[in-house]
Amino acid sequence: LDDNLDNNLDRLHDCADIAASYDIELAIETIPCRKSDPLSNVRRAIEYDERSRVTLDTEFLAKHEQIESVFAADWLWEQPLVRHVHIKDYDGQGFRSDGSRKYLHPDQGHIDFVRFFRGLKQHNFSGSISLEAPAIDQQGHVDIGRLHESLDFIQKSIEVNK
Image (cartoon, rainbow, N blue to C red; front, side, top):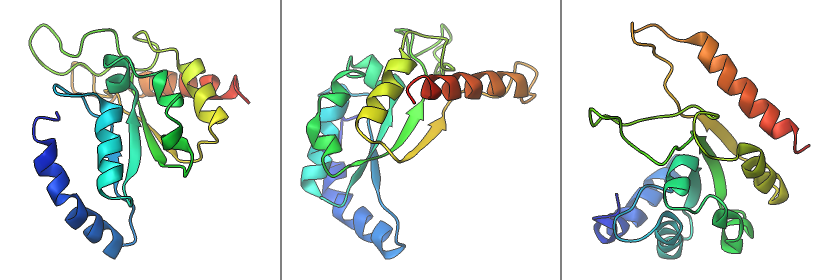
């Protein structure tokens, strides 16, 4: 969360220096917030250290109703700053009834991924994309079929916009 954002920003220069010493770009993720919103906080980080780049998280953007406004934020796309995208869906809830985090595969929530990928294409996004969803079933086995379904869904959502 952004409860200690000022404290974290105070360390950002050091983190960016370390990343740069390994020829790595530091990407700040659009995380859930209590004091502000993901895009405002990422912008603060960029303004604090211009070496910072951005990782978009679809769930957290949707949670803060910024899944569309991310494409209206010209400052993200002019350089471009967005280097990575975490793909997971959002259904209006972030937790299960037992209090554990709820990660949804794309197509299990309300995000329009065809539209989202269209926005990425329109802004010439050339970074990487990660599926960030559960792969372990109730018995502790990797659910390969579900992974294939999600990756097929992502591929089809991208292909619609080609």
